Length: 235
Length: 232
Image 1 (cartoon, rainbow over the protein chains, first blue to last red):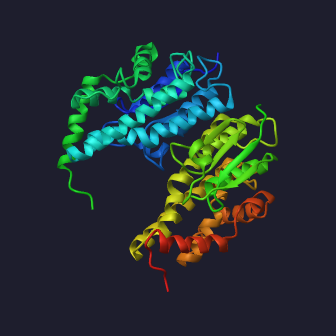
Image 2 (tube, one colour):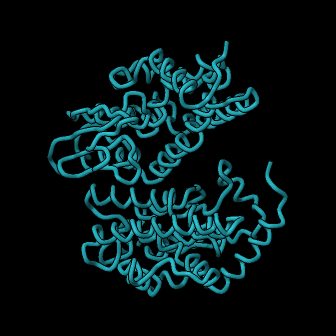
Image 3 (cartoon, rainbow over the protein chains, first blue to last red):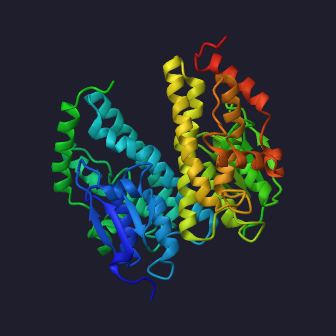
Protein backbone atom coordinates (compact mmCIF):
# COMPACT_ATOMS: atom_id res chain seq x y z
CA UNK A 1 0.00 0.00 0.00
CA UNK A 2 1.39 3.38 -0.96
CA UNK A 3 2.19 6.07 1.60
CA UNK A 4 3.29 5.73 5.21
CA UNK A 5 2.51 7.78 8.34
CA UNK A 6 0.50 10.98 8.66
CA UNK A 7 3.64 13.15 8.74
CA UNK A 8 4.24 12.46 5.04
CA UNK A 9 1.36 14.64 3.96
CA UNK A 10 0.42 17.99 5.45
CA UNK A 11 -2.20 20.43 4.22
CA UNK A 12 -2.01 24.10 5.19
CA UNK A 13 -5.48 25.57 5.09
CA UNK A 14 -8.49 27.13 6.76
CA UNK A 15 -11.93 25.65 7.40
CA UNK A 16 -13.85 28.27 5.43
CA UNK A 17 -11.74 28.39 2.28
CA UNK A 18 -13.38 26.68 -0.70
CA UNK A 19 -9.93 26.33 -2.28
CA UNK A 20 -8.80 24.35 0.75
CA UNK A 21 -12.00 22.27 0.59
CA UNK A 22 -10.95 21.25 -2.93
CA UNK A 23 -7.70 19.78 -1.67
CA UNK A 24 -9.40 18.05 1.27
CA UNK A 25 -12.05 16.41 -0.92
CA UNK A 26 -9.33 15.08 -3.23
CA UNK A 27 -7.26 13.75 -0.33
CA UNK A 28 -10.32 12.13 1.23
CA UNK A 29 -11.48 10.52 -2.03
CA UNK A 30 -8.01 9.06 -2.42
CA UNK A 31 -8.00 7.90 1.23
CA UNK A 32 -4.77 9.74 1.95
CA UNK A 33 -3.89 10.22 5.61
CA UNK A 34 -2.80 13.79 6.20
CA UNK A 35 -2.21 16.35 8.90
CA UNK A 36 -4.39 19.44 8.59
CA UNK A 37 -2.65 22.59 9.78
CA UNK A 38 -5.16 25.38 10.26
CA UNK A 39 -4.04 28.93 9.50
CA UNK A 40 -5.51 31.57 11.79
CA UNK A 41 -7.81 34.03 10.06
CA UNK A 42 -5.94 37.26 9.38
CA UNK A 43 -2.42 35.90 9.93
CA UNK A 44 0.06 33.87 7.89
CA UNK A 45 2.25 31.28 9.56
CA UNK A 46 6.02 30.92 9.04
CA UNK A 47 5.40 27.59 7.36
CA UNK A 48 2.95 29.15 4.88
CA UNK A 49 5.30 32.00 4.01
CA UNK A 50 8.15 29.53 3.56
CA UNK A 51 6.11 27.02 1.50
CA UNK A 52 4.33 29.51 -0.74
CA UNK A 53 6.58 32.57 -0.85
CA UNK A 54 5.18 33.74 -4.17
CA UNK A 55 1.46 33.94 -3.45
CA UNK A 56 1.46 33.42 0.37
CA UNK A 57 -1.91 31.72 0.06
CA UNK A 58 -3.63 28.55 1.17
CA UNK A 59 -4.02 25.73 0.35
CA UNK A 60 -0.49 24.36 0.28
CA UNK A 61 0.05 20.63 0.18
CA UNK A 62 3.36 19.53 1.66
CA UNK A 63 4.26 15.99 0.59
CA UNK A 64 7.53 14.61 1.94
CA UNK A 65 8.61 18.19 2.71
CA UNK A 66 7.90 19.35 -0.88
CA UNK A 67 5.25 22.06 -1.26
CA UNK A 68 2.58 22.08 -3.98
CA UNK A 69 0.57 25.28 -4.41
CA UNK A 70 -2.62 26.32 -6.24
CA UNK A 71 -5.74 24.31 -5.44
CA UNK A 72 -6.39 22.63 -8.80
CA UNK A 73 -2.69 21.89 -9.30
CA UNK A 74 -2.87 20.17 -5.89
CA UNK A 75 -5.93 18.17 -7.00
CA UNK A 76 -4.15 17.02 -10.17
CA UNK A 77 -1.04 16.16 -8.16
CA UNK A 78 -3.08 14.03 -5.73
CA UNK A 79 -4.65 12.24 -8.70
CA UNK A 80 -1.23 11.62 -10.26
CA UNK A 81 0.48 10.38 -7.11
CA UNK A 82 -2.24 8.25 -5.48
CA UNK A 83 -3.15 6.71 -8.77
CA UNK A 84 -4.00 3.29 -7.35
CA UNK A 85 -6.19 4.55 -4.54
CA UNK A 86 -9.83 5.63 -4.82
CA UNK A 87 -11.50 6.75 -8.07
CA UNK A 88 -9.60 8.49 -10.89
CA UNK A 89 -10.30 12.20 -10.56
CA UNK A 90 -9.65 12.84 -14.24
CA UNK A 91 -11.24 10.90 -17.12
CA UNK A 92 -9.04 8.77 -19.36
CA UNK A 93 -9.80 10.46 -22.68
CA UNK A 94 -7.71 13.54 -23.58
CA UNK A 95 -10.69 15.53 -24.84
CA UNK A 96 -12.78 14.76 -21.75
CA UNK A 97 -9.82 15.94 -19.68
CA UNK A 98 -9.64 19.15 -21.72
CA UNK A 99 -13.33 19.80 -21.01
CA UNK A 100 -12.77 19.28 -17.27
CA UNK A 101 -9.87 21.74 -17.35
CA UNK A 102 -11.65 24.31 -19.53
CA UNK A 103 -14.70 24.48 -17.29
CA UNK A 104 -12.53 24.60 -14.17
CA UNK A 105 -10.78 27.69 -15.61
CA UNK A 106 -14.24 29.12 -16.28
CA UNK A 107 -15.33 28.49 -12.68
CA UNK A 108 -12.25 30.30 -11.35
CA UNK A 109 -12.20 33.16 -13.88
CA UNK A 110 -15.90 33.93 -14.25
CA UNK A 111 -18.10 32.22 -11.70
CA UNK A 112 -16.15 32.71 -8.47
CA UNK A 113 -15.49 36.45 -8.85
CA UNK A 114 -19.17 37.11 -9.53
CA UNK A 115 -20.19 34.89 -6.60
CA UNK A 116 -17.99 36.75 -4.14
CA UNK A 117 -18.94 39.99 -5.81
CA UNK A 118 -22.34 39.45 -4.19
CA UNK A 119 -20.74 39.76 -0.76
CA UNK A 120 -18.20 42.43 -1.61
CA UNK A 121 -20.34 44.84 -3.63
CA UNK A 122 -20.63 48.21 -1.91
CA UNK A 123 -23.97 49.15 -3.51
CA UNK A 124 -27.26 47.31 -4.12
CA UNK A 125 -26.81 47.98 -7.80
CA UNK A 126 -23.38 46.38 -7.92
CA UNK A 127 -24.68 43.47 -5.88
CA UNK A 128 -27.55 42.91 -8.32
CA UNK A 129 -25.12 42.93 -11.22
CA UNK A 130 -22.83 40.41 -9.51
CA UNK A 131 -25.83 38.19 -8.85
CA UNK A 132 -26.90 38.35 -12.52
CA UNK A 133 -23.41 37.38 -13.64
CA UNK A 134 -23.31 34.51 -11.16
CA UNK A 135 -26.67 33.25 -12.42
CA UNK A 136 -25.56 33.54 -16.06
CA UNK A 137 -22.41 31.53 -15.25
CA UNK A 138 -24.47 28.85 -13.56
CA UNK A 139 -26.70 28.64 -16.62
CA UNK A 140 -23.66 27.90 -18.79
CA UNK A 141 -22.44 25.35 -16.24
CA UNK A 142 -25.90 23.73 -16.33
CA UNK A 143 -25.55 23.25 -20.10
CA UNK A 144 -22.01 22.00 -19.69
CA UNK A 145 -23.19 19.47 -17.12
CA UNK A 146 -25.76 18.15 -19.56
CA UNK A 147 -23.03 17.47 -22.12
CA UNK A 148 -20.20 16.31 -19.89
CA UNK A 149 -22.04 14.06 -17.41
CA UNK A 150 -23.64 11.95 -20.17
CA UNK A 151 -26.60 11.19 -17.93
CA UNK A 152 -24.54 10.27 -14.88
CA UNK A 153 -24.70 11.98 -11.46
CA UNK A 154 -21.42 13.91 -11.65
CA UNK A 155 -19.33 15.95 -14.10
CA UNK A 156 -16.88 13.10 -13.56
CA UNK A 157 -19.50 10.48 -14.44
CA UNK A 158 -20.26 7.84 -11.82
CA UNK A 159 -17.80 9.28 -9.33
CA UNK A 160 -16.75 12.73 -8.19
CA UNK A 161 -13.99 14.17 -10.36
CA UNK A 162 -11.87 17.22 -11.05
CA UNK A 163 -14.60 19.63 -12.17
CA UNK A 164 -17.06 18.41 -9.52
CA UNK A 165 -14.43 19.28 -6.93
CA UNK A 166 -13.65 22.65 -8.55
CA UNK A 167 -17.28 23.81 -8.50
CA UNK A 168 -18.71 21.77 -5.65
CA UNK A 169 -16.28 23.18 -3.10
CA UNK A 170 -18.16 26.48 -3.46
CA UNK A 171 -21.57 25.02 -2.54
CA UNK A 172 -21.13 25.96 1.12
CA UNK A 173 -20.65 29.63 0.26
CA UNK A 174 -23.41 29.51 -2.34
CA UNK A 175 -25.88 28.30 0.29
CA UNK A 176 -24.65 30.98 2.70
CA UNK A 177 -25.27 33.75 0.15
CA UNK A 178 -28.68 32.33 -0.72
CA UNK A 179 -29.64 32.47 2.94
CA UNK A 180 -28.21 35.93 3.60
CA UNK A 181 -29.78 37.51 0.54
CA UNK A 182 -33.03 35.60 0.29
CA UNK A 183 -32.56 34.54 -3.32
CA UNK A 184 -31.74 31.28 -5.06
CA UNK A 185 -28.56 30.71 -7.05
CA UNK A 186 -29.40 27.12 -7.96
CA UNK A 187 -33.01 26.87 -9.00
CA UNK A 188 -35.09 23.76 -9.76
CA UNK A 189 -36.66 25.39 -12.80
CA UNK A 190 -33.56 27.05 -14.28
CA UNK A 191 -30.74 24.75 -13.23
CA UNK A 192 -32.43 21.41 -12.46
CA UNK A 193 -29.39 19.31 -13.39
CA UNK A 194 -27.09 21.30 -11.13
CA UNK A 195 -29.62 21.11 -8.29
CA UNK A 196 -29.60 17.32 -8.48
CA UNK A 197 -25.82 17.35 -8.83
CA UNK A 198 -25.43 19.60 -5.76
CA UNK A 199 -27.52 17.19 -3.66
CA UNK A 200 -25.51 14.19 -4.83
CA UNK A 201 -22.27 16.04 -4.18
CA UNK A 202 -23.10 17.27 -0.68
CA UNK A 203 -24.60 13.92 0.34
CA UNK A 204 -21.35 12.17 -0.45
CA UNK A 205 -19.74 11.02 2.80
CA UNK A 206 -16.28 12.27 1.97
CA UNK A 207 -17.55 15.69 0.91
CA UNK A 208 -20.01 16.11 3.76
CA UNK A 209 -17.13 15.88 6.20
CA UNK A 210 -15.33 18.94 4.83
CA UNK A 211 -17.92 21.32 3.35
CA UNK A 212 -18.30 24.08 5.95
CA UNK A 213 -21.68 24.50 7.64
CA UNK A 214 -23.90 27.17 6.12
CA UNK A 215 -24.64 28.80 9.50
CA UNK A 216 -20.94 29.20 10.31
CA UNK A 217 -20.23 30.70 6.88
CA UNK A 218 -23.10 33.17 7.28
CA UNK A 219 -21.59 34.26 10.60
CA UNK A 220 -18.15 34.63 9.03
CA UNK A 221 -19.57 36.53 6.06
CA UNK A 222 -21.11 39.08 8.41
CA UNK A 223 -17.75 39.60 10.11
CA UNK A 224 -16.02 39.99 6.74
CA UNK A 225 -18.66 42.41 5.42
CA UNK A 226 -18.24 44.57 8.50
CA UNK A 227 -14.51 44.69 7.80
CA UNK A 228 -15.08 45.76 4.18
CA UNK A 229 -17.39 48.54 5.30
CA UNK A 230 -15.07 49.86 8.00
CA UNK A 231 -11.85 49.49 6.00
CA UNK A 232 -10.36 52.76 4.76
CA UNK A 233 -10.89 53.28 1.01
CA UNK A 234 -8.05 51.86 -1.12
CA UNK A 235 -5.96 54.47 -2.95
CA UNK B 1 -5.22 8.57 -29.72
CA UNK B 2 -7.84 10.17 -31.90
CA UNK B 3 -7.07 10.85 -35.55
CA UNK B 4 -8.37 13.75 -37.58
CA UNK B 5 -7.42 17.03 -39.17
CA UNK B 6 -5.90 19.68 -36.93
CA UNK B 7 -6.71 23.36 -37.37
CA UNK B 8 -5.40 26.17 -35.22
CA UNK B 9 -7.22 29.50 -35.04
CA UNK B 10 -4.83 32.21 -33.92
CA UNK B 11 -3.48 35.67 -34.47
CA UNK B 12 0.14 36.22 -35.44
CA UNK B 13 1.22 38.29 -32.39
CA UNK B 14 -0.62 36.29 -29.72
CA UNK B 15 1.80 34.49 -27.36
CA UNK B 16 -1.10 32.19 -26.46
CA UNK B 17 -1.45 31.05 -30.08
CA UNK B 18 2.32 30.95 -30.62
CA UNK B 19 2.87 28.52 -27.76
CA UNK B 20 0.35 26.12 -29.32
CA UNK B 21 2.24 26.35 -32.63
CA UNK B 22 5.45 25.57 -30.72
CA UNK B 23 4.04 22.40 -29.23
CA UNK B 24 2.55 21.25 -32.55
CA UNK B 25 6.01 21.80 -34.07
CA UNK B 26 7.70 19.91 -31.23
CA UNK B 27 5.37 16.98 -31.73
CA UNK B 28 5.91 17.07 -35.49
CA UNK B 29 2.16 17.35 -36.11
CA UNK B 30 0.84 18.87 -39.30
CA UNK B 31 -1.93 21.39 -38.98
CA UNK B 32 -3.70 24.13 -40.84
CA UNK B 33 -3.18 27.58 -39.35
CA UNK B 34 -6.02 30.06 -39.74
CA UNK B 35 -5.28 33.69 -39.00
CA UNK B 36 -8.21 35.39 -37.30
CA UNK B 37 -8.98 39.08 -37.08
CA UNK B 38 -9.92 40.16 -33.57
CA UNK B 39 -11.70 43.24 -34.88
CA UNK B 40 -13.76 41.10 -37.22
CA UNK B 41 -13.98 37.67 -35.61
CA UNK B 42 -14.58 34.72 -37.89
CA UNK B 43 -17.67 32.49 -37.82
CA UNK B 44 -15.41 29.61 -36.95
CA UNK B 45 -14.05 31.41 -33.89
CA UNK B 46 -17.47 32.48 -32.64
CA UNK B 47 -18.83 28.97 -33.19
CA UNK B 48 -16.02 27.13 -31.44
CA UNK B 49 -15.29 29.57 -28.62
CA UNK B 50 -18.65 31.18 -27.88
CA UNK B 51 -17.77 31.79 -24.25
CA UNK B 52 -14.56 33.79 -24.54
CA UNK B 53 -14.48 34.51 -28.30
CA UNK B 54 -10.67 34.44 -28.11
CA UNK B 55 -7.77 32.76 -29.82
CA UNK B 56 -6.22 30.26 -29.77
CA UNK B 57 -8.75 27.54 -30.53
CA UNK B 58 -7.59 24.09 -31.56
CA UNK B 59 -10.01 22.24 -33.80
CA UNK B 60 -9.25 18.54 -33.97
CA UNK B 61 -11.72 16.60 -36.05
CA UNK B 62 -15.06 17.56 -34.51
CA UNK B 63 -13.52 18.68 -31.20
CA UNK B 64 -12.80 22.28 -30.24
CA UNK B 65 -10.42 23.03 -27.41
CA UNK B 66 -9.98 26.54 -25.96
CA UNK B 67 -7.55 28.18 -23.48
CA UNK B 68 -3.90 27.84 -24.43
CA UNK B 69 -2.70 25.85 -21.41
CA UNK B 70 -5.66 23.47 -21.75
CA UNK B 71 -4.75 23.04 -25.44
CA UNK B 72 -1.08 22.33 -24.64
CA UNK B 73 -2.07 19.59 -22.21
CA UNK B 74 -4.57 18.16 -24.71
CA UNK B 75 -1.89 17.90 -27.40
CA UNK B 76 0.54 16.33 -24.94
CA UNK B 77 -2.00 13.76 -23.74
CA UNK B 78 -3.69 12.95 -27.04
CA UNK B 79 -0.37 12.51 -28.83
CA UNK B 80 1.46 11.06 -25.86
CA UNK B 81 3.26 8.50 -28.03
CA UNK B 82 4.34 11.06 -30.64
CA UNK B 83 7.55 13.04 -30.21
CA UNK B 84 8.77 14.00 -26.76
CA UNK B 85 6.54 14.72 -23.75
CA UNK B 86 5.78 18.38 -23.17
CA UNK B 87 4.94 18.06 -19.48
CA UNK B 88 7.37 16.22 -17.20
CA UNK B 89 6.61 12.61 -16.32
CA UNK B 90 7.15 12.96 -12.57
CA UNK B 91 4.02 14.19 -10.72
CA UNK B 92 5.89 16.71 -8.59
CA UNK B 93 7.79 18.14 -11.54
CA UNK B 94 4.46 18.31 -13.38
CA UNK B 95 2.94 20.32 -10.54
CA UNK B 96 5.91 22.71 -10.63
CA UNK B 97 5.62 23.11 -14.42
CA UNK B 98 1.90 23.88 -14.14
CA UNK B 99 2.59 26.37 -11.35
CA UNK B 100 5.16 28.36 -13.34
CA UNK B 101 3.06 28.38 -16.51
CA UNK B 102 0.20 29.97 -14.57
CA UNK B 103 2.68 32.38 -13.01
CA UNK B 104 3.93 33.50 -16.46
CA UNK B 105 0.36 34.26 -17.58
CA UNK B 106 -0.84 35.83 -14.31
CA UNK B 107 2.17 37.91 -13.39
CA UNK B 108 4.69 38.28 -16.20
CA UNK B 109 2.34 38.86 -19.15
CA UNK B 110 0.26 41.39 -17.22
CA UNK B 111 3.46 43.20 -16.22
CA UNK B 112 5.04 43.61 -19.64
CA UNK B 113 1.76 44.45 -21.34
CA UNK B 114 1.23 46.86 -18.45
CA UNK B 115 4.44 48.66 -19.43
CA UNK B 116 2.98 49.34 -22.86
CA UNK B 117 -0.41 50.36 -21.51
CA UNK B 118 0.95 52.75 -18.86
CA UNK B 119 -0.17 56.32 -19.43
CA UNK B 120 2.09 57.92 -16.79
CA UNK B 121 5.81 57.62 -16.03
CA UNK B 122 5.05 56.35 -12.52
CA UNK B 123 2.75 53.61 -13.79
CA UNK B 124 5.36 52.62 -16.38
CA UNK B 125 8.14 52.47 -13.77
CA UNK B 126 5.94 50.31 -11.54
CA UNK B 127 5.25 47.83 -14.33
CA UNK B 128 8.94 47.71 -15.28
CA UNK B 129 9.76 46.88 -11.64
CA UNK B 130 7.04 44.19 -11.63
CA UNK B 131 8.48 42.68 -14.81
CA UNK B 132 11.99 42.60 -13.31
CA UNK B 133 10.65 40.95 -10.17
CA UNK B 134 8.78 38.30 -12.17
CA UNK B 135 11.83 37.56 -14.33
CA UNK B 136 14.00 37.17 -11.24
CA UNK B 137 11.60 34.61 -9.83
CA UNK B 138 11.67 32.81 -13.18
CA UNK B 139 15.48 32.82 -12.99
CA UNK B 140 15.17 30.87 -9.74
CA UNK B 141 12.61 28.55 -11.30
CA UNK B 142 14.91 27.91 -14.25
CA UNK B 143 17.79 26.97 -11.97
CA UNK B 144 15.66 24.36 -10.20
CA UNK B 145 13.74 22.99 -13.19
CA UNK B 146 16.61 22.79 -15.66
CA UNK B 147 18.97 21.10 -13.18
CA UNK B 148 21.93 22.32 -15.21
CA UNK B 149 20.47 21.47 -18.62
CA UNK B 150 19.53 23.81 -21.48
CA UNK B 151 15.79 24.14 -20.98
CA UNK B 152 13.17 24.32 -18.21
CA UNK B 153 12.14 20.94 -19.61
CA UNK B 154 15.70 19.59 -19.28
CA UNK B 155 17.24 18.28 -22.49
CA UNK B 156 14.24 19.26 -24.57
CA UNK B 157 11.73 22.09 -24.83
CA UNK B 158 8.88 21.63 -22.37
CA UNK B 159 5.78 23.25 -20.95
CA UNK B 160 7.40 26.25 -19.24
CA UNK B 161 9.79 26.78 -22.16
CA UNK B 162 6.91 27.29 -24.61
CA UNK B 163 4.77 29.27 -22.18
CA UNK B 164 7.55 31.74 -21.46
CA UNK B 165 9.24 31.42 -24.85
CA UNK B 166 6.06 32.43 -26.68
CA UNK B 167 6.29 35.81 -24.89
CA UNK B 168 9.83 36.64 -26.00
CA UNK B 169 8.92 38.70 -29.07
CA UNK B 170 6.66 40.90 -26.94
CA UNK B 171 9.22 41.24 -24.16
CA UNK B 172 11.85 42.39 -26.65
CA UNK B 173 9.36 44.71 -28.34
CA UNK B 174 8.45 46.16 -24.93
CA UNK B 175 12.16 46.86 -24.34
CA UNK B 176 12.39 48.79 -27.60
CA UNK B 177 9.18 50.71 -27.05
CA UNK B 178 9.80 51.63 -23.43
CA UNK B 179 13.56 52.04 -23.60
CA UNK B 180 13.90 49.86 -20.49
CA UNK B 181 16.14 46.81 -20.32
CA UNK B 182 13.92 43.96 -19.16
CA UNK B 183 16.16 40.95 -19.86
CA UNK B 184 19.27 41.95 -17.94
CA UNK B 185 22.29 39.63 -18.00
CA UNK B 186 23.48 40.92 -14.65
CA UNK B 187 20.13 40.24 -12.94
CA UNK B 188 18.97 37.09 -14.74
CA UNK B 189 22.11 35.46 -16.24
CA UNK B 190 20.72 31.93 -16.46
CA UNK B 191 17.52 33.12 -18.07
CA UNK B 192 19.55 35.10 -20.64
CA UNK B 193 21.43 31.94 -21.58
CA UNK B 194 18.12 30.13 -21.91
CA UNK B 195 16.70 32.94 -24.07
CA UNK B 196 19.62 32.68 -26.51
CA UNK B 197 19.46 28.88 -26.67
CA UNK B 198 15.69 28.90 -27.05
CA UNK B 199 15.67 31.51 -29.82
CA UNK B 200 18.23 29.43 -31.74
CA UNK B 201 15.92 26.41 -31.90
CA UNK B 202 13.93 25.53 -35.03
CA UNK B 203 10.83 25.55 -32.88
CA UNK B 204 11.33 29.21 -31.96
CA UNK B 205 12.46 30.28 -35.42
CA UNK B 206 9.40 28.74 -37.06
CA UNK B 207 6.87 30.25 -34.68
CA UNK B 208 7.97 33.56 -33.18
CA UNK B 209 7.19 36.70 -35.18
CA UNK B 210 9.87 39.34 -35.91
CA UNK B 211 10.43 41.65 -32.99
CA UNK B 212 10.27 44.62 -35.35
CA UNK B 213 6.81 43.67 -36.53
CA UNK B 214 5.61 43.22 -32.93
CA UNK B 215 7.17 46.56 -31.98
CA UNK B 216 5.28 48.31 -34.77
CA UNK B 217 2.05 46.62 -33.73
CA UNK B 218 2.64 47.48 -30.06
CA UNK B 219 3.13 51.15 -30.90
CA UNK B 220 -0.03 51.04 -33.03
CA UNK B 221 -2.03 49.60 -30.11
CA UNK B 222 -0.64 52.23 -27.75
CA UNK B 223 -1.95 55.02 -29.94
CA UNK B 224 -5.22 53.54 -31.19
CA UNK B 225 -6.39 51.46 -28.27
CA UNK B 226 -4.57 52.33 -25.07
CA UNK B 227 -4.45 56.13 -25.27
CA UNK B 228 -0.73 56.21 -24.61
CA UNK B 229 1.07 59.26 -25.90
CA UNK B 230 4.12 58.01 -27.82
CA UNK B 231 7.50 58.86 -26.28
CA UNK B 232 9.62 61.30 -28.20
